[in-house]
Length: 186
Image (cartoon, rainbow, N blue to C red; front, side):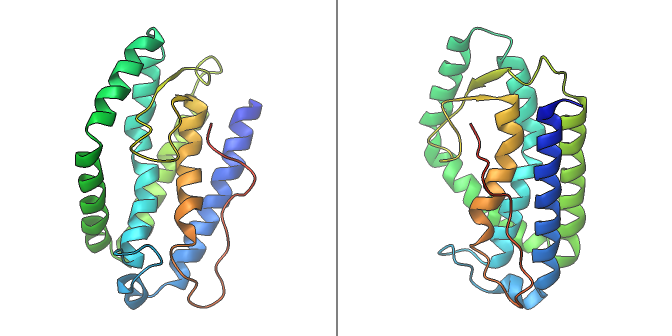
């Protein structure tokens, strides 16, 4: 197993444990409470964190496609996406709000588990020559996106995204654990 795979698997295992610890400590009522992110409930933030894993199913094929073309093509694509930042922000907010209602405490754990398993499959099946494939990203969409991101960076994105939002859901009973520290995207 490559060093990249081993490091990603270790970081992902830590996130898996942190997610389930956080979910186990929250009640249905806790999920309806305001989070530390203005205007969002705990459930909406938690779904948004899970969606960071779900979206990887779309991001990885994009990296694999654009990464085989000259960089200037993905740069143009990223510029186009950046021009639609207002639309993206609205869809992102609506998605979190809707997902926070659809994915109840009982449903969000299994959804995370499926997305997590898909990320592990991606990590395990990526060829050693694919980790360096990359593309330009719409940096106005997310402060965690860098101008140019490789497949490894994209696989680290849900980890960084999870860690960024983790403290926005306040601890409810003291059993909360943190995410992965010391590693970042890009």
